[in-house]
View (cartoon, rainbow, N blue to C red):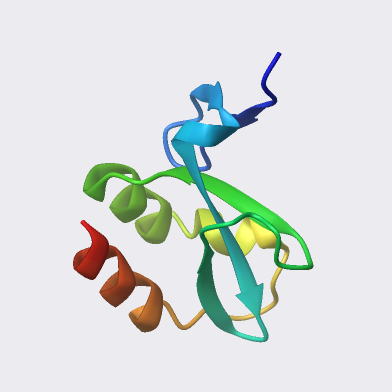
Length: 83
């Protein structure tokens, strides 16, 4: 049975393989395509809607337990390239 994770934006439970793992490196938000980077991770559907909801609600900051704002520019650019 495949592990199940919860999307930080829509709060829907989904198989791990259908979600994107995101980690914070300092104050920079990074996509973790292979889900192997160290540290706390947050899971989100790789859709424009879920990512925008998570950014607007500051869900990544809460889920990753980061103090202060996150730099999301690199993360958003990588989504646009892959999307």
